[in-house]
Length: 95
Image (cartoon, rainbow, N blue to C red):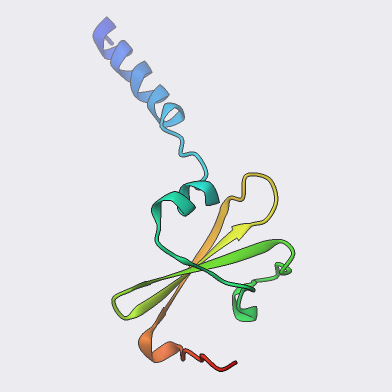
């Protein structure tokens, strides 16, 4: 193997560690996604987490609601995204 080939191979092996993704945090979401704060997360979306462990935000796009779930502790990292289309939810504005 020639010297340039070895250098290219070594550089290629280092790229994945240099491009490791940072966790998506609520601070980044808050600044970049128009959304509504939910008072509580829908029970069906908690997936074993308690309400004390996570909080939810919702955004609308076309005919769908997108529910974002974040951790409450630390840097408030993104946990999950749940999408519900218009035939999968009902909005209730009752008092």
